[in-house]
Length: 99
Image: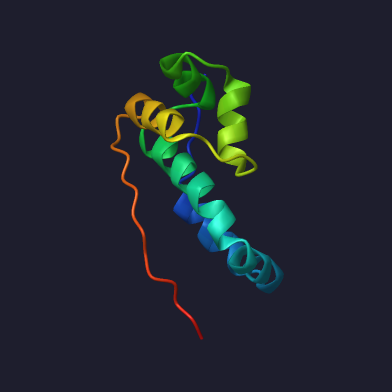
């Protein structure tokens, strides 16, 4: 069985048309930024959570928790995730926009 991957950008564009979703999303943007980046990296690698888990030596449930945005992973965990998805971890600081 082949899995069909739906690009995260496609799903997000569809959801953003809903004003209530947009309001809640904007309020939680910082909390979801990391989760979105993890999901995007895995999607672009065309990997399932199970495949990433195997590469990282962990469980699919652990990957699901990472992607849920409900936990803050260590830098080491993020480095392992990046290696598993054949990406490079970059951390940056940005000025906060006020107003």
